[in-house]
Image (cartoon, rainbow, N blue to C red; front, side, top):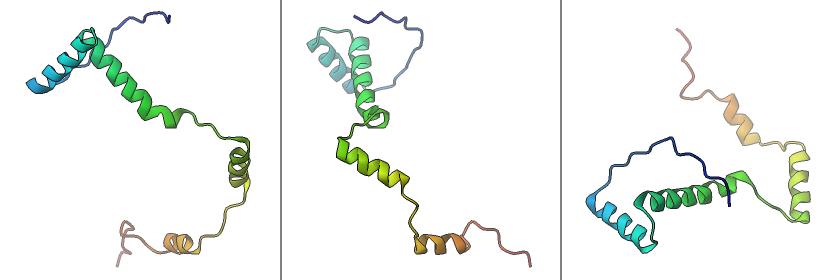
Length: 96
């Protein structure tokens, strides 16, 4: 079991009475305090949200294709090159 960390930071929420009642009911169904339930639920959702940003796995063939794409020279994109040559709406007008 991991060592328990001290809780020194606080998070305040404003919520409707209905939302609080739903959270209380769910916490009671799990035999947890409201704080425990909300913290576990929020951390679980955070882990799901961040999972694809922290690590990904590739099989050998996909890894080879991925590294080949990274190592390949950039391909010419004429439309993109033209876009960068044209002045944008954010460029300052010529004084005049």
